[in-house]
Image (cartoon, rainbow, N blue to C red; front, side, top):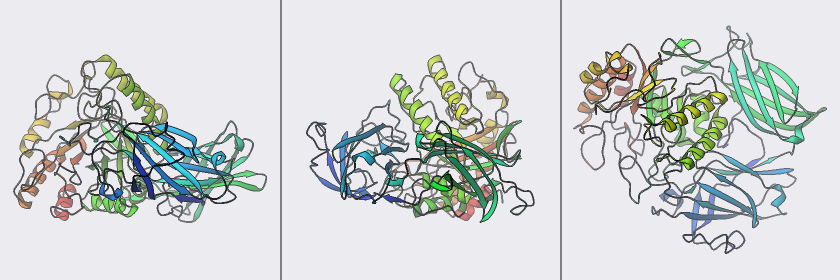
Length: 582
C-alpha cells in the first residue's frame, strides 16, 4: 500500500504537513486542584520532566510514581509552521477530562480516556514560539470508563496500575480552512464499490470532491461530487480486471489486500485540500450459525490481548512494538485478537489491516450502573465506533464484557434496555459488523453467543459443550463455576454463531502472580493442557471460533504465552500446530 507514513497517528486520513509533539514536556501534580485558579495555564510551575505520551505512573515517562494524583498538568513550547491557514491540535488519547490552553487562552476540552479529539487553535497562535498547556483530571470513579485500570490504591485481581493523563500521541496538523474532516468508507462486494462518506468544514461547500482509487499503483476508479451541507457522498466503482481476474481484490487474513484512496477538494482547477487514505474490500455476514467473511465461513482463532508493556503500561513503546506484537500473534497460529478493555493506538489497526489480523474492538468498562455511567459509555463509544469504522480488520464490536458496569443485567430491565440501546446505536452507525452486548454470559440482543470458561480439562470441556441444548434454553448454567447462564432473563437463543471467547489462562509454576486453574510444572505440562482444551473446542461442530487467554503476562496476571517483554514461554511452533490442527 502506498498511502502509508511511518508513525503517522491517524493513518486513514493523511495530510503531508504535520508534526508530532511527543517527547519532553514540563509536568506538575496539582493535588489541591488550584492550577487554573492560580494561573498555571499562563505561568507554569514545573515539578518534573515527562516524556509524552507515557503517563507519570510508568518508568518510560521518567517519573514512575504509581500513586493516584487526580489533577496533572503538562506544558511545552512549540513553533508552528509559517503560512499555515489552519493549525489543528490532535490528542489521540488522554484520560480523562482534558482542558487545553494555548498561550494561556482556553482552546477546548474533552471527556473520555480512549477516543481521539481535536481543536482548531489557529486564532490563539502568535508568530514564532507558542506555549501549549494541558490540565487533565482523572479519578477512581467507577462510573468513568476505565477498563483494566484499578480504582483501589493497589493492584487486585485482574486490575492494574491506573493510566492518568496523556497516554497517546499529541500532534499538530496544518490544513486549509476548506477541508475534509472525517471519512467513512464502506465496501460493497455485491456491486464492487466503496461508499465514501466525507465530512467537511462549511468552507468546503460548493467545491468538488474528487476521489481516485488504486491498487498497487494501478488506477481502478475515480468519481467526483459537489460538497453540500458540509458532506459529500461518492459511490466509487473499483472493479478492474487489471488488478484481479475477479475484478475486485478482497481483504481477508490470508490475503490482506488494501486499496489506496486519494481525495482532492477542488475549486475550479485549484486543489484546495488533499488527503490520502485506504480501504479494504470485505463483507461480513451471519448465516445459519456461521460468521461469513466474503461469503465463506470464517473460523476465528483469537487470542486475548490487553496491550500492556512493562515500562510504558498501556502506551505502546513504539510503532515497531505494535508490529512485533502482531507478527508474534500470527506466528502462534492465531488469525485475530480480542483487544480486551482497551482502544488501541490507531497505528495498531493500520498494521492489523496491512498484515491481515482480525480485531474485536472492546470498550473499556465502567463498574457501576448509574446515569453518569450511561452517559459516559454512550458518548465515548459512539466516538470510537465512528473513529475506527473504516478499518477492515475490525470485524466485531464489543461494548460490554462479563456484566461489568451492568451487574444486575440478568434481571434488571433498565440495564438490559441500556445494552439494547447501545446495540441499536452501534447498528445504526454500522449495520454490517456483529455486535456483542455482554461478552461471556447473560447476553441480551447479541449477534454472537460468546461464552467464557476456564475449565482446565479438555475431556470435561468437551462433555460440557457437546450438548448445547442443555444451556441454549437458559434452563441450566454452562460454566465451570455453575453460576453463569448464556442469556439474561427474557432472552433466548435464536441461532447466533457460538464462540468460546475466553478460555485457557494457563500459568507456569514458580514465581508470583496467578493464572486460571492450577499452575503447570513446565513446558510439557503446559502444552498438554493447552492441546487438550484447544482441541476440545475445535472438535465442537457448532462452535465457530475461540479466544485464548492471553498473549502476554500483565503485571500480576502471569498467564500469557509470552512474558511482558514479549519472550515466548513455550515453543511457538508447538502452539501454532495445535491452533492450526496440524
